Image (cartoon, rainbow, N blue to C red; front, side):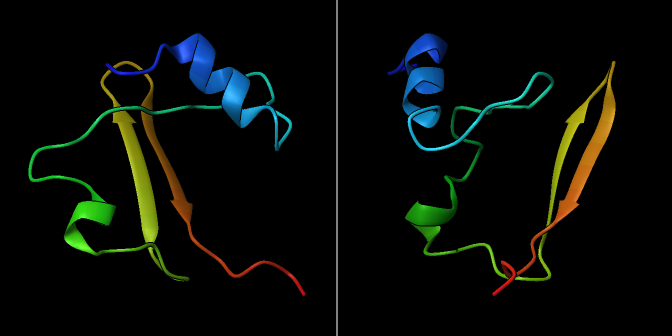
Length: 66
């Protein structure tokens, strides 16, 4: 890993409030990641984070309110 999680948390918290229980992921999955593949999240996409012990966290991407 190039950055330590302490550094990632410090960087994120400069622009937004982090709350207890939030997930922060790091790393690259097999076959690369969206930026390398020129694939980006769009409204309607579903993002899932799965853990054997915790279950699945599923969120749908939406447009921000005007």
